Image: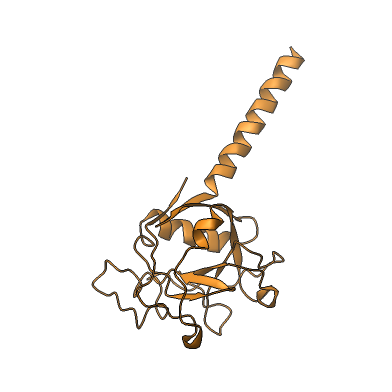
Amino acid sequence: MNRILSYIFILFFISANQLIAEENIMILKLKDGDVKIELFEDVAPNHVKRIKELANSGKYDNVVFHRVIDGFMAQTGDVKFGNSESKEFDLRRAGMGGSDMPDLKQEFNSLPHDRGTLSMARAQDPNSANSQFFICFQPAPFLDRQYTVFGKVVEGMEFVDKIKRGDQNNNGAVTDPDKIISFKSL
């Protein structure tokens, strides 16, 4: 009897962990394919909550990658001015807006800005992150502990690599940018 209870407990523990793990997996659909992202709720709970809320309500759908610097990162997430299907869309202002929600307090952590890292964009104020985020193409250790790392690409980085690059002489500004097709929980 104890053996049966032990097996039941083990199966329950495995299934509970699987559900928790799936809860923090997102799919970012890009023009070239799907990108699977793991969110790090344990180190950036408020940022993960914000990303999930905006993503699952469709706020990131059709939002452009307004700043893309080869060898560095691709930035997106301006749900106010960067949504190419919105009447407020303004490519010249993309990167200056956010959501209607309040800015987030920083949740700097020890996770490095490696290739595939997702991190929140912000203004000079460390507590000004809102909806914009970036994905690193290459390691960027100079950003460590200065920006909130909240996730990592676990599959599909080759599709992130195909995002249209911006003008190096204009801080990575992109004319005719690629966009997020959709961003949702698994």
